[in-house]
Image (cartoon, rainbow, N blue to C red; front, top):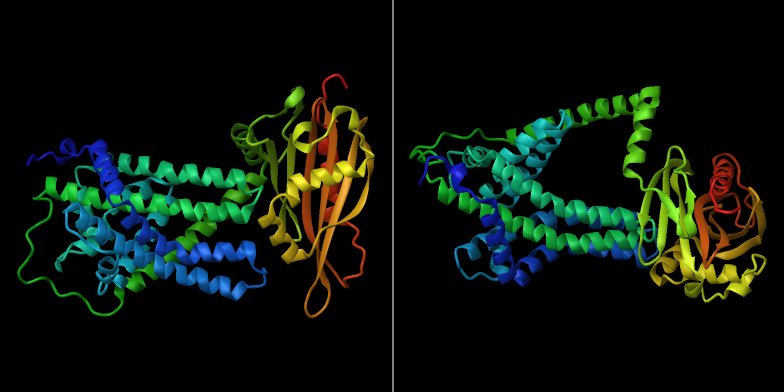
Length: 472
């Protein structure tokens, strides 16, 4: 073998071989990882379909999900390694093969995440270095039978001389979840629970492929660097008994929490300064798309807001700001619905016609059965509270308010107010809607917005008034 292992490692070859191995054993790998995510998927389904007062069962399922996930992650490493060597292996054998190594694998995996997190908090660069150097530690703890070297030392020895190529490989792989989570954040404003469920399901495919790449990388580097690991000592050094590793991981976690607290606190204080506020606005302008509706109707991004754009199936903008109403972030959504989709004819448009409001409500709310069922369970059926028109900056808008209430044990009630504004422009309806929860002393009490909620309503009216309608 060549002494310069870095020249022998071809990341495209590793990716190509990983993809072939993944395709040939797709159902085996997906089955193992899918079992690991099963509890989390069930938990997300419950968030959509079942009564939301299941906090304890949600915590239980989420916690158990981590233990099952570590078990399946270890099993898939065993499966990939066996299939890499052309050995036949069954689903049952993979999970059974974890026995005796489960806790070590979990400990090494958690410690790796803590080390990576600590490094990223220390100005990012240490995180990149440690994350790359120790990336093979969770694989090594399962596949290496040595007792004279820890898995982190093994990973460091294998990665030595190949750092940048391994770093580039993981950078490419990391682009996959980044794409997935971008889709999630763009669709969360439409249906957050369903979007999270979709991410969980698609993560099964990504995680299984990521594990394949890690195991293939491990075997390739070890084959190309036979002299990377020192000869195993016949009399391995005695290991200190006890839970020193656990104490070390706990200490590292405490350090991470302390560092992150100071770092985040300092960052928040900086953004409160004039320079920090200016930087924050520049960042928001850079990552927020321009708000342009059909007919060249435009809206300048309101100060303090992030903007998310969804182009299909209809034009959809979400204006998000860390503005709290009863401890929940309020999001103002804009939609541009063609008349054809709303089954409206141009000569029929009358903002005083409540039937149009019912059609709009159906398209953006009632049409989604899963979302509607979730809201109905949480707050009760939504009912029309008020309907009318309002003049906003010489532009007539329809104002449709829906409300739902549910009794709260032992006393009082919870409610949700949802407001929809809409106005016709050319051959489409420009719609803005938002909602927020509130508490009542009794189920019969009539809620009137005040405080943060009242300020938010004024803010929404101000934003609607700043929309530029050409030819107005």
